Structure formats: C-alpha cells, structure tokens
Length: 143
Picture 1: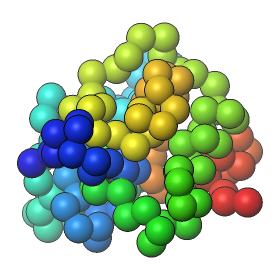
Picture 2: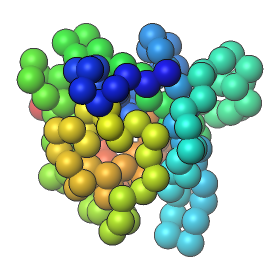
Picture 3: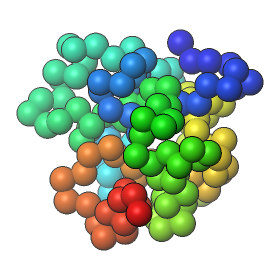
Picture 4: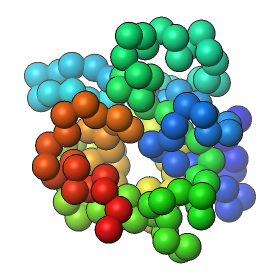
C-alpha cells in the first residue's frame, strides 16, 4: 500500500528487489521508439514467484520496481535530495511529452523533487541495463 502524498514518505521509482516494501510498477516492452516501461495501473506486491518470471534475466532488467526511498542508505541521496533524479533530468533526453500513467507519482521522490521533467524521462529507466548508453551511464553514476 502506498502512503498518502502528504505523509512525507517518498518512493524510489528505481528500487532493487531486496528493498523493504518493494512493489512492481512496470514492465519493459519493446516499442517502435525502443525499450520503454509499460506502467501498471496499481503497484503489485513483489513476490519470489513474480521475480522468478524474469529468468533468465535479472528482475531489474525487465521489471520496474518501487520501494520507500532509503535516503541516506542510498548512494544517490545527498542528505536532501536524490542526485540520480537530478542527473536523469540534466543528462537524459525526454522520451515522452505527456505524463505517463503512474501509480506512485503522488509519493515519487523523483516527481516531488524534479517535477514533470523526471516523468518525461522515466519510461526509459531500468535499474539494471546490460549495455547502457554513455548518457545513461553518466546519469546513473554518482560523482
């Protein structure tokens, strides 16, 4: 269950499967424009069975997960904001020009911090990419 947007809890839209409270929010699909996340209408609790369905790939190569932001336990959090979200907006091109459907937007750390520009880039983000572009590598690497 997601928190109320006023609760103060923020969700990371690029979570790892082992994060407490992780949920499935999207699945990678191939489109005419390349690989994009197809978002679910509602988050789905993450289970071992669901994770196993991604085999032989790692789950974060095909599944988009969200979980409560771990803040200082995350290498991207600087004590006040998510630097990954900042770099994504600064480095990556927008891949959509309208807000994609998103079940976590009210509590999404990226949206609350960077606004709509983060949403325009979000459908191209996977937590694990085997051969990332130079732009994606720069955006994902903390300084």
